[in-house]
Amino acid sequence: MECNDPKCAIHGGLKTRGAEFTGKVVSDKAKKTAIVERDYTRYMYKYERYLRKRSRIPAHNPECISAKTGDLVKIAESRKLSKTKAFVITAIVKKEG
Image 1 (spheres, one colour):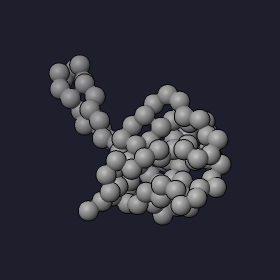
Image 2 (cartoon, one colour; image 1 turned 90 degrees about the vertical axis):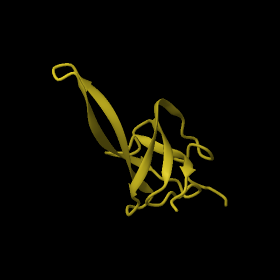
Image 3 (tube, helix red, strand yellow; image 1 turned 45 degrees about the vertical axis):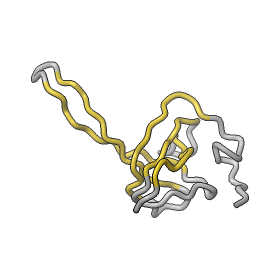
């Protein structure tokens, strides 16, 4: 499939930098955007225990990748693409099902 998306990290001119995460796509309803949920732990010194946290990151979903809900994806930080998006999906690690 040919990709004409200028905001694609693989075929377009978008450069990635900084943080790279893996997470699960929980929503792909918006056009060219996917919400990626990432679970992580944070240590709390006061209670000497770990706290489970999760973050929902809006990421650009290029047409050539087209990740769907339930997919495990790799996202990378890039420049600001819109008001909320500063990450782009670079690869699908595991398809749903």
